[in-house]
Image (tube, rainbow, N blue to C red; front, side):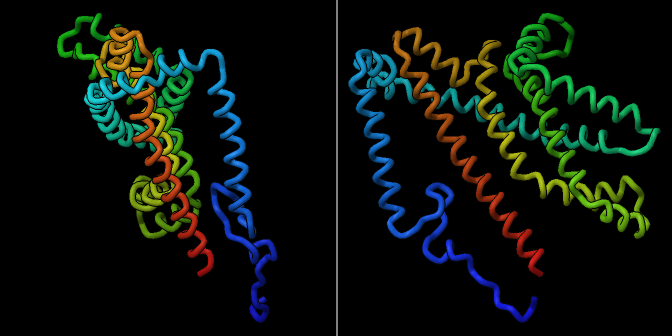
Length: 287
């Protein structure tokens, strides 16, 4: 009712909200800090007093090996970043094509819809490592002129093929999330079905799926390490080489830390974009 002032729920009056800490009431921060100290203190005590901890610390947390390995691993990480950026560019385009093919209506476009469905179902079902193996070793073995023999190229092709199937489904969800009245309005303005899809539906669909797309690309960044299985010398393969030379597993810890330094900021960026979109939608509803 327009004459009644909105009321604030009582539970919101005595505290603040935090995504990590939850609903903060008076004294809630102190309780959260105390409970964290207790839990992590007990965990640290148990690990520190484990019989095998001194050997585990030397094998996995050797500071000398860590700092000696880090510059070498950073050079390897640049290969992963290049692979990720190139794959992401091709995936965005190819996956959008697959999603559009699957969304085309009418019996005339049935072959395109069938091709898209079969492709998406096939490569979502196959493990990424299997596709990388088959293409990375089977492609050069064909000996056809013009085919690359570089593991970087075959790893890139494999990642694009596999991840395009996942991203195409994200695009399709965005396309189907646009209200049919938008397409009807475009048709009423004289646009063809394809023009309405291009100028009206797709721009709205792409904006809707930015957060889930970025989540998929976080997974893609991690999957670049799988290309080491076909001989590409990237960060994980360099960690394997360093481990073989030092008989110490600390290089794997250093490689994992480098991946964390990339993926955690990306995850926080996804959270920020999702929160911004929610605020924008709430503001549009309020108007």
